[in-house]
Image (cartoon, rainbow, N blue to C red; front, side, top):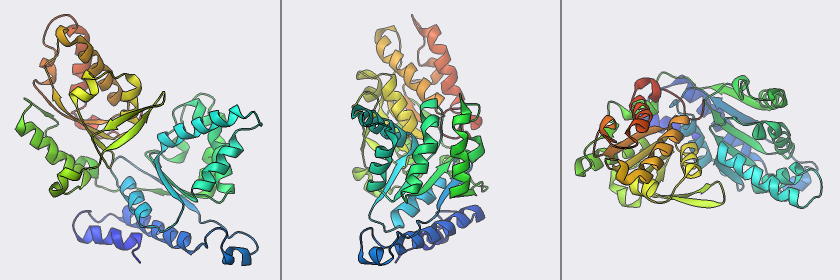
Amino acid sequence: MTTVLARYDALVAAGELRPDPDQRAAAARLDRLQQELEAVPARGSTLWKLLRKPPEPPRGLYMWGGVGRGKSMLMDLFFDTVHVQRKTRAHFHEFMLDVHARLAQARKSETGDPIPPVVESLADEARLLCFDEMVVNNMADAAIMSRLFTGLLEKRVTIVTTSNRVPDELYKNGLNRQLFLPFIDLIKAKLDVMTLNGPVDYRRDRLGDATLWHCPNGDAATQALSTAFFRLTDYPPSDRAHVPSEDIPVQGGRILHVPKSLKGVAVFSFKRLCVEARGAPDYLAIARKYHTVIIVGIPVLGPENRNEAARFVTLIDSLYEYKVKLLASADAAPARLYPQGDGAFEFERTVSRLMEMQSDDYLALGHGPK
């Protein structure tokens, strides 16, 4: 049977990863967790009944470190390798949106505290929960997380999560942070905390010296962005016709179709994002979900396409707020994208942000809001 550590060592041997002591230590810990999870008998089995009491669940893991250090890669490797019947992997923000939707539904029943039934339903669906990019930036999440995760751990759920922040830095300076402190204590008591701060920023390394803004639009720009996509996602160019798409939820119950979606990288046309009727909820859903966005076909903007320009401004604001990496093809450089006419002055802030988003300092930032 394939193990996490064997798959990791194979990637290093093949030259797809560089030797990294922090990564290998995390891979070894995930390997051990894989064995522990697979050794637990299935719920309701004869062995479970013979034990008379449920076996202790394996202890989970909290992996934190700088952007691009391989945290998500290792968690994906673990999730794909471990053989358990009930497992779930989710971006942490999407998971919390789902939790709040479940809480709202539970409150409608008016049967009392809504958290226990939500915990019950989540535990029934998965005994292994894997979260990517745990970050807490609002009081609604902070206020419930201690009780929610205490309940999940009591229900024997094993949790593996990644974050750009050490546990003590979560929700730092947040409103009513004292309500959140028990959750930090819970993490340190119930999960192993491991640091991944190796020397290689793989996300930045894969971009290399690649040009992020290509102009004019055309075959050369499209080919350059296609090459960048395959380099960022490790997807073989020979399978370009089968790149997966995805439908992501948008606040308000709508669904946004993402034409190409793989390993935190999304590809859109300008038409889909800014000519079609879109708004801030769409752009925030994209910014929260993806660490890198590729946009093709941006035209020169002006008063004649004011609505499209306004949507583009809102889109860039959202991507900038969440420190999303942007690659694009356009008919002009950022400084000449809205050259004249009514609205040109207001567009200058967007030009400034587009320029900053190509800087090394911006590219070194982790995905997520400040």
